[in-house]
Amino acid sequence: MDQLLDLLGGLPRVALSPSHLLNGEVTTPYGQDPSPESVEAAWRDLSGDRILPPWILLGRRDTPNGTVWRLSWCPPRGPLPASVEVALPEGLWALERLTSESGPEGWNLRILASPLGTWVGLWEGARCERLHGPYPSESEGIDRVRAIAAKTGVVPTAEIRGDWNVPSAHDLRALASSYPESDLLPTTESVWRGGIRADHASFARVLAILAAFATVTLGLGLLQATAWSLRRSQDTRLESVQPLLDRVASLRKSRAILQDSIWIRKDALAPNSVVDRILSGIARKIPDGTSLQALALERSDTGWRVRTEASLSDWNQVQPLAQALRAVPGVAKVVIASQARSGTGVSAVLEMEGTWP
Amino acid sequence: MALSLPPGSRETLRSLAPWLAASLALQVGMRVVWLDQTRAFRADLGRAAELRQVVPEPAALRAQIAFLEHDSALLVSRLAWARGRAIESSDPGAYLAARLVPSMGQEGWKLQRVRAESKAGWATLDLGAQADFDQILSGLRRIRLQPTAIQIRKFSVRPSEHGLLEVELQVAGPTGTER
Image (cartoon, rainbow over all chains, first blue to last red; front, side, top):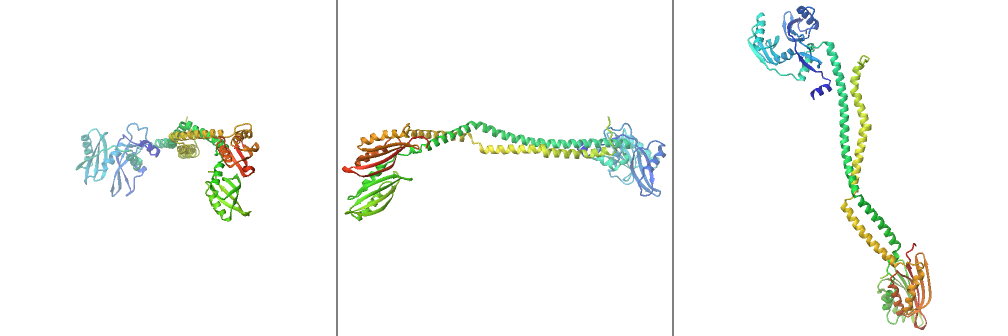
């Protein structure tokens, strides 16, 4: 996963590779860093016309003649790893580990046991003077570095042991960034590999975009499938009740037809006219001394309407007759339409309205 | 076979390729694929929600069917009753006269005039007769108790000779045909 992220980020792959360590020094004007030309000149002095190898700057010491830079040339030892863009000498990591250790003032030996062997360096305080290794055994390394130191009249007074750890990809990239001159790969090879790495990174980014597209599409597809499933379940429910719905529709339709048929025949449903009851009801309410001369009944929109002519002995019987007729069942209204003297009596025309009992 | 490209174009291509791919993916996704997926997703969800609300439960439908069947049965019987009360005859007027005239005669009505006709879904019978008051009441009661539906549209009485009353009566019965 980390490698994939490094590839997407376009970060170079860095690895350690075995190399020789050839110690030397370069003197520059006070305060100036060593230029590649000065390092190459020092290399020429040491090895003639051989190709300038990568180098590691070990430390510096200011002297009256200028700044003396201690360095180690690192000719590769064996084939370089094929799958990296930067190959650093293994000694560079040993130098990092030993430099991170705090030591006493004065000359001291710093020893680092690693899976590759034992690295032994000569330090003056916090400044590295020399670095050698890896030696098959610690005692051999210590003896040889002490012997080298003794030739220059230096006697280390202390031995400091560092802790080895496997560098992470991040550590190695930081190291490669800090020591660009230490890359064991030839420049053209490094550029070519960087191009290939950039091609792969670009391709990986395209693939990542396509994967993101596919992921979003898949996610939406899952939502779509879920929604389809919900709809399908509801469709299934609808299908399961469809016969019942059809039955309801059929019953409603047939009921509507029945209702229409009944509406057409609604007159046949009405009860028969009960004129006999109205007539007998009126007859029972006629007071003594009063007689009806004529009676006409007809249907109205709301019930029935009666117009009758009554003969009464005097005027005072007209209102009681009307009052009595109002008590007939179903009668809603009694109106005296006219009243007139007729011979020795009185003739009154009454109009009644009512509903069917 | 190595691909030969102009100087600098390889770097440009490798820089632009992810952007081109992202742009293309976004265009295709947002305008075609994701748009269609979203539409289908929303349509399915909407349809499911609609069906969830619209489609009734089977138990409710069965109850409704039971109610409708019961109601239809009532309507059928009511329709049968209405049909039974309507005059089903090729000559409804004559049928109505045949049902009522003899009955009125049996009740003591002295018929003077009878006219029957059928019009606009109704059979109509006009009667003119003489009878006393009790005969009139019993005749009207006999009309009321007829099994067919009969309306008395007009009814009038007035004194006549020999202590009788002169009756004018118009009755009508539905024929069960279209009006």
